[in-house]
Length: 431
Image (cartoon, rainbow, N blue to C red; front, side, top):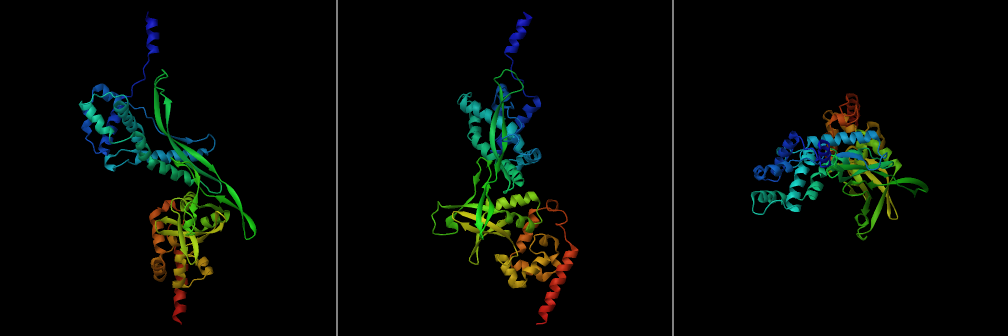
């Protein structure tokens, strides 16, 4: 009889309960969520003991980040993305920071609570209308829709993963994005086969580069198509720009496809020399996706490369070939063919050779020279609107984010530039 009893018990085995610590943590997070919605935490007190036990059951497990297709993303990239993403989720708060509800808590304890109460109230109808439990559940559930909340609440996490993965992306090689989903998995805490857990998961996607040859100055040159990788909810798509932004009479639905020459990448890295390789990748991609700005100057159209809403670090030139735009070089901010560079030229009358000699065509010039010792140059930079870019660079990056030895004042460089402008002043005083 004892053996039969044992076999019978195994056939009805129930999933193991969450530990008391997990249940307590779930309750704490549930109260934080109520505070987020501006609700009284005492709404939880009206539920029965069994209802509270169910509401505090944790079945959303730790979110995962993995390659969408095995073997497509280098292991070190995945390791870095995982590390940075988990750090972000555990140290950043959803909603009002005073509630101290981290994204990690929301993705585990929070979603467990929200999904359970929504299921009990809207799907299973477990609460009798008119009871305190019904009123509390109704008050809580009317504040959110679980699926909408997941998309909105985890947008910051998605943006952070997008930011990290794009740091590894290269337009002329391979671009990384991600898709977000929620997976249903067997609950390993039991072996009945009928219990499941869920988790928020991010799948890192790969977009291989696409090339096209264009005839430029009677020479066929390889170019690379610009893409926007998958960013959580949306699939990758080629970048385009409406033709009527350049030609006002064109129809709204007509667009240019966007391509870039290899030459541009070299010029870009050379002139934006204070940034790390990952930040080069980010800046280049953001210039054509998030912060695309067409500047019409001196009967010429340029694409601005911005690090702030109104702080360019240089400009891209381009050609038009049929329905395609080909980005063909990158101009330094002080170049005479840029709006700021033209103003600086009028103020200082510097030749292209002098600009190159001083190193003004590279951003490191603005982070290594002590301009307080060269007031005439500082004033010219202010009057030409270049100074705001210098300030934006300082605000954007801490010293450890810039390349080594290029983020502090270089006295030898400062002395060289100061002597140059002192001699220029002496020469001008003679006339």
